Each structure stands twice: as structure tokens, then as C-alpha cells.
Image (cartoon, rainbow, N blue to C red; front, top):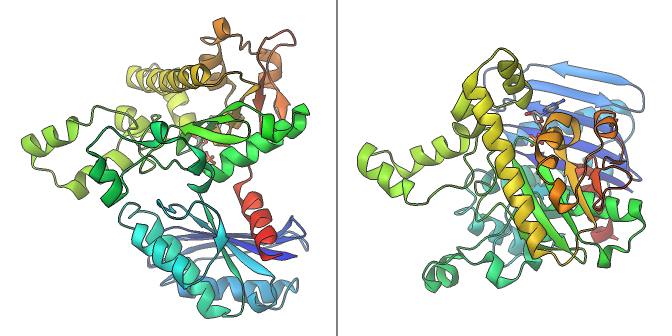
Amino acid sequence: MKILVLNSGSSSIKFKLYDKEVPVITGLIGKIGEHSSQIVMKDLVNNKEKTSDVPVPNHKAGVKVINEFLGETGIVKSLQELDGCGHRVVHGGKNITKHCIIDREVLKEVRRVSVIAPLHNPANLVGIQAVIEAAPELPNVAVFDTAFHSSMPDYAYMYALPYEFYEEEGIRKYGFHGTSHSYVSKKAAEFLGIEYSKFNAITAHLGNGASVCAIENGKSIDTSMGLTPLEGLMMGTRCGDMDPAIIPHLVRITHLTAEELDVIMNKKSGLLGICGKNDLRDVESLIKEGNKKAELALNMYTYRILKYIGSYFTILPRTDALIFTAGVGENSHNIRKKVCDKLAHLGFELDDGLSQGTSGKITVVSKANSKQKILVVPTDEELEIAITTQNLIK
Ligand code: ADP
């Protein structure tokens, strides 16, 4: 089956075409709506690349660019010829708990939930709409970041606010990065030869956005992100957990609006807020130069990861594996070491040699005699979306 996977952001579209679960075309259209856009598209079969900076005014025009490139490659004539398109949709809200074929009702619900996901759902929707317009007959599937976490028990997802906020406004923990937590835990179970329905794990997805998840018997039972992807760990530009009373306090003393505070907490905080850099590699370079704020930022970052792993260890009756994934989790031995060195008393013993030698494959990085297993598992959210789309269309 030929499946296109689309990840539409507010000013970008990332896409990948799969033929029988193998990526054949990949691309990114960035800076949509600006004077010059950034287009990079690769035909992986014929080893050809196309780059351009022609302005792409909106997502509809972006999908047209993708459609034309598909035709140029000769792999398919156009979008119409595909078997389906899988869309990453960030928030499914209270009512959508499973990935699904997109119809009017699904679109309506994703639009309704935009109130609690204003940074993501509207952008996801324009991408879906653009594909529907370009290829009306093509089946579209929505794969939700929140769906994997719909198995959380109520005592884990409820906030201790008046109950009406949950009933009337849907205020609860939803969790994100579901496709990644689900993909890497399934891969790890398969690798360790444990039936997924009996597999327990703690997964740490550490990318620009970051979250930790506790998985019991193949199901998410708790995760660090909440109503939005802001809760939990300290991230590249997001603050993560803090005393909620800080918000009304800041409103009172600075007169910042809700929108301005939202931007500060999501885009100007985290590693960036503390030391001026959001890419962990840059933070590490600053530390080498003796920058104390960068050192503080890194200590805060790893301390939070450690606290979440510790708390999820206590809620799981048994842990089969601690899994590191995404940009930082897969590539930074330094972060794995800083975290795992403090987990030795819980039985997680990192093997420095193995952890330094990871190479884009599933790797056990714990010592041979470590009581608990530590794994690095490369994530592949696009492939997970392609497989899910394929299964739903079948
Ligand atoms: P996203 O969350 O946008 O999908 P990724 O999962 O690709 O992002 O993670 C990107 C982040 O991974 C970068 O910002 C960078 O901090 C981090 N990263 C990538 N490679 C390394 C590395 N070798 N060492 C430390 N951090 C890295």
C-alpha cells in the first residue's frame, strides 16, 4: 500500500510517502506564508533531491507542491493514486480516544478541541482540509498524539479542581507523544521477547518537546504532559511543571495577558529561558566554555527526568525496561549517564561503553548484570502513523 504521512504545523508541512512501509519520498515545506519558503524534497528511490525557496502562501499551495513532486518522481502520478493519507493530529480531546478514518464528525470534534490545543489542532486541520480538496476520494486517517494515553485511570488524569471543570470544559490530563511512546515500547517488547500485553516500561521521549510515560501491560497508565504539551519535564523552550499560582501572580504584578504568558511558557522558557539556548548540543558547548547558567539549565533538565522516572518506577508493579528515545534520548550519552547514575540504587546500571556506542539501532545500554534493563530505541512516529493508517484503511 502507498501511504502519505503528513505532519502539518502552523507554518510547515513535513511529509513522507511509504510504499509497503518503506519510505520512498520525504520532504519538508517550511516558512509557509513568508516571503520565501524553504522546500526540501527527496526521492529516495532515484536518489534525487529538489530544493526551492519559492513562496508557498498557505497549506493548500503546500499540498499542491507535494502533489507536483510526487508526479515528477514517477513513483506515483499524483495524490489520487495513493491508498491513503495519515495525518498527525495532536489533540483528540475527551471524545476521540482512538485513531480513526476522517469524516465530518471527526473534523468537527478536532475543530472543537482546538480551544485546548490552539497551537496545534488548527494547523493539523488546514493540512487535512488541503488534502481533501486536492484529492477528494483519498481516504484520510487521523492519528492522535493523545490516543495512546486514553487508557490512563481517572485518578491519574484528573486535576484536583472543581469537578465541573472536567465535566463542562474537559480539563484533564491527556498526554502527548503517544505514537512515539507506543512505537518504542512495542519495539522494545519485541526485541526483549516479551509479549506486549504483559510488557511494563518507562519511556523517556526527549526531543525538543519531552515527556515520560509509564506503561503497564502495554498500556499507558500515566504520562508527564497534561491538558497541553506544557506540563511535565523541562524542555527546549517549554517550562514544564511549576506552581500554578505563578500565573495569577504574574498577571497581577506584570499585567501580561493570557496569550503573552502562553508564548513565554511555551516558546521562551525551558533550556532557552535559563541559558539562552534551546538545543542541548549548544547548552553542552556553553558548559564547556564555563557558562554557569548553562550548567544550571542542564542540571534542572536532568533532575526533572530523574524525578519522573523515579515516580513512575513506584507506580509500576514491575519494570521490564527503561527506554530512551528521540533526539536527546537517542543521541546523548551525557544525559543518559547523568540520569542513570542516580538510578543505580533502583537497579538501573548504565554501561558507559555500550551507551557511548549506540548507532541508530535498538541497543541495550545497561550492564550485563544490571537488575533493570536500559534501552535506547530510535523512534519513528511517521512509520507508526503509516502503519496505523494502513491498518485502518484495510
Ligand atoms: P522534535 O521533538 O522536534 O522531533 P528531535 O526528537 O529531533 O526533535 O530532537 C531534537 C533535539 O535533540 C535537538 O534540539 C537537540 O537538543 C537534541 N539532540 C540531537 N542530537 C543530539 C546529540 N548528539 N547530543 C545532544 N542532543 C542532541
